[in-house]
Image 1 (cartoon, rainbow, N blue to C red):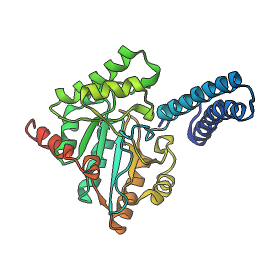
Image 2: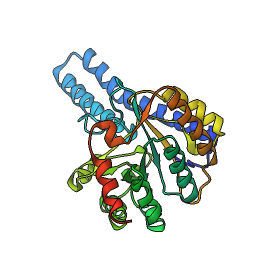
Image 3: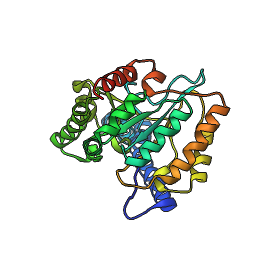
Length: 291
């Protein structure tokens, strides 16, 4: 999720994103539909072969665009974006921290509710606040890397993209934290990024739903957006960063979100626990030995 986009903010930014996404979807759908129509109506074999080739190119372009812009879409089914909906467990994740007092208040709220979360941390914020990063995992939460500077990776040259990933992960290691989780800023990804993550042994994690809390609406608005998304298997996206940014609306909403989750009998767990792996426990144990 973006804090600003071409000068827009708040509701205008949200509508701008939707308009842009609709335009992309229209263009890529047309790249498939137009040659497919030609394939169906063409009589001569050379024309049909040409339209078949153009249809294949259009399908590839559509799949590529979906992979880049839809966080949980992956034609190889390697990117988790939700857990099992059969139980009463869900995960709440926080991007862009650690962020000083805002992250500390998130931790205090989760401790009060005996719940766990997952934090995707920006490397330079970890450099500035290594003790807070260690506190996150020492209290039983999971962490992952969110690059070094929160750059949009699919826009970067390959070496710069790889450096963003590697430097962000190295900041966790330097803080004494072991984790194999990674989340791409804004959910934007590329085939090259996915290959580099696999080569580094990192797991790309998406999410089921976000509530646009970085638009900084009121806490009540954020709460109302989140309420229908409190259900088994959900991976809910919130933001405790960026460093120095006011997250008071999100914090006001979070207290009510946690109360609502309790009322519904939901168990809030880390992403690795929701997905059935032990990464969170390993991270916490590693951090505990360094504090």
